[in-house]
Image 1 (cartoon, rainbow, N blue to C red):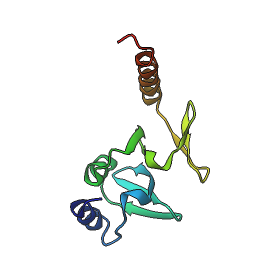
Image 2 (cartoon, helix red, strand yellow):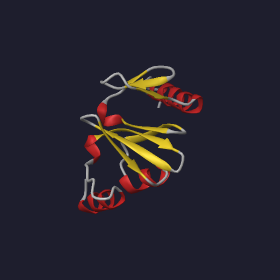
Image 3 (cartoon, rainbow, N blue to C red):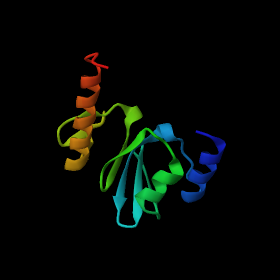
Length: 116
């Protein structure tokens, strides 16, 4: 994480600083966002999830559902309807996101055939 991002995260969390690698997932709660960190820590931020994602600025934190984002660096196991984290937490996947992911998988498989 760059020094710039550390400063922004510290600012929005009222001195509860953390690094991107500590994030397990985010959950939107109305106009607030809950950030779930390793070690069973949970922080509430009084900004919506979209704003928090913009400020964190990490490509590995992916929005999976209207109310959830997951840190793909934590290697969640993908099911048809959710991601399963190592601690047993289930993160829902929207139908649209699941279809988009399947389309991407098909495209990668198609490209691997060697037709190009």
